Length: 567
Image (cartoon, rainbow, N blue to C red; front, side, top):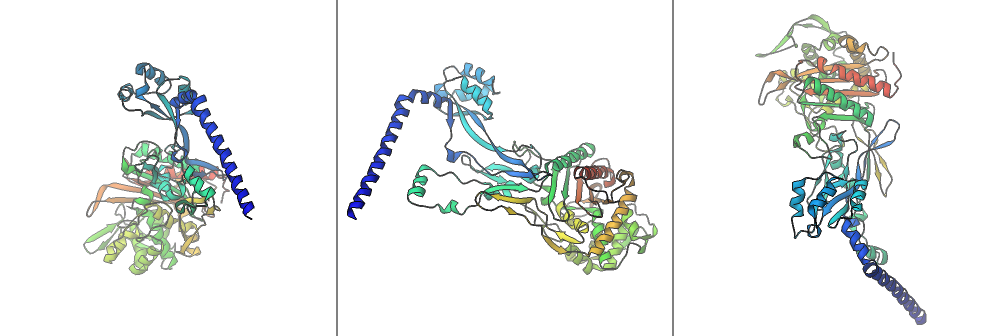
């Protein structure tokens, strides 16, 4: 047995001796035989150690046919670096380099004039072609540094969804900031490759690194359809050009599942570029709360129908205004229309009609319905960072606050909250949880898919069908000049106009928020669409600013997805 042990020791010694001899020979070859060649090449191109090259998972969009399309990924290229101590003729070097990549002359001379500094970076994100052209110049003191960086192929497309990266202070130490980059930062981060010493420990000694052994890394696949996202953002740009609002946004969702198909806002930003206004980085669709106006009448009417205190044919006496103590609340024109039905309340968007329904429900039951719709100090639970909840004045339990809330004033919510609540009407009365992450494709674990979540039933399927039929009539009558372009489809739609509140109390008489909500085909809804604009110029009502963009989006989606007509 001792003999076998000695034999193994001699064998191991021989193996180590052979390995050591090979390494010594290789070292001699590198340092002596090819030393000058390698030194010249190293002066022209320097590659960062593998464990310091920036790496990160990809965020994908999902095309109509299920294909993945990169929204945020890694781009490889080179940085241009000079060693001022080795530059022999800075002027000639500048002329040669600027013919390949533009360089600032004053900046170059400043950096080249540092005699004791061996490393000055002149440019980054150079392509392989540019790097090859520079390498062929054989310029002493010029280096090419291999680098990776975060790249957004769509430029500003879906910027508020994707977010951006920010430096944490160290070399290649970046973290997600805003959007999905932040939401899934720990999953998108890549583990550093093992260094040589760690390799020895893992391979020979069986050591493990607790910091990385249980980590989960992977790619994010979103529900965003890139062509639809692009079309939505084009429509937002058109609204911006025509009406110059301070803020504008839109969301397209599958009302049956909660999957967000497109989401955009303006002002936007370039996630891969320099940021000039940090306020633009915030996603107003989930991080801004607004009074939405008349689209909320749909929820008030649905509650009344569900509680069976009104029907579409129920009538009331519209006198134009209703008094609450020393306060009067009226229709948009303060004109009474006499005996009108609930259908006409929606057709003409009558504030007094919404108040009538609230009064038939009673304040407590009205508040309970709004709570069920997720409007009162609740978040939708979307997988995006920084979501906020809205506010209401119900704690005062004053009739005037309930009256204004019935038509969308005095109660604030995020655009996503409004869309989610309203989309329950397109989903047989069921409230879904919206989401943008379709699946997480882990590197070393099975892919995890997001399953649609039905949060609650807010009204009966019968109520949802009734309000849908009423909304189709609104579209056919109140929006007939546009609806005529879609004679074979039923579109449920409603506009909203809200006054902008002043700081403290009261409302501006000439500042408005415009909103538009709709879903289609109404008999079997595939899409729900929400648009809003804050303080558009030159139009008082949303019917003027948002009707055409809504129907442009509607026609595009019906054609793009080849949706079968429903009438």
